[in-house]
Amino acid sequence: MQIGELAPDFTLPLHTNQEFRLSDHRGSKSVVLYFYPRDFTWGCTREGCLFSSHIKEIEHLGAIIIDISADPVESHKEFVSKYGLAFPLASDVHMTVCRIYGAVWLNGIAIRRLTYIVDKNGVICGKTRHELLINKHWDYVLGVLRALVTTNDNIQSATP
View 1 (tube, helix red, strand yellow):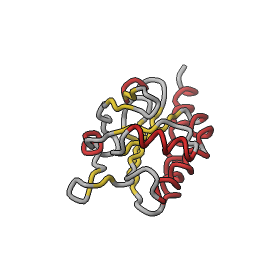
View 2: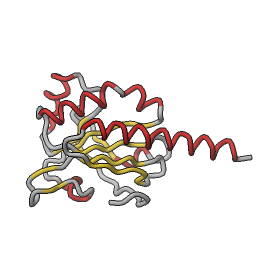
View 3: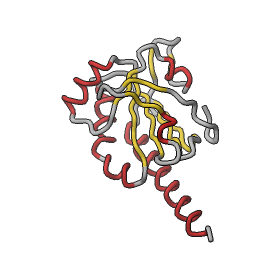
View 4: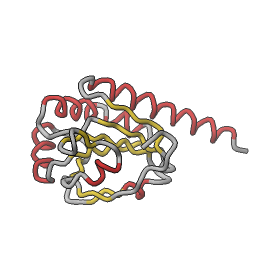
């Protein structure tokens, strides 16, 4: 998946017992999709807590965040409960969506830390991958979301 491409639609179960469908947010919100290896690991916990601590800023910038891993919904429920994460976790136990988005590696046995930003039109406008540099994901997401808001504000103010 590359910047400028239409993000493939998908539906996955959430830890909230609801389903997330990417296309349901077209026209209303940008979506931060971040793929991560496993619940309760050091890096994934750190990244989840980092994004969670900035949830108000993400929402203020007109976006939502969805985390995706191959862990089952029950594991996600425990992970969210233990760390107080402020956004939904999606379960892709068969790694179908992870494969589509290029987040599977090590001959298909692991998920890499990969983040996409999908704009309100469903177009991928940001993509970053850092296995260990967790803060880089947040810095990048924040920059892209701010640019989207600035671009949208400029388009709206230029419209007669």
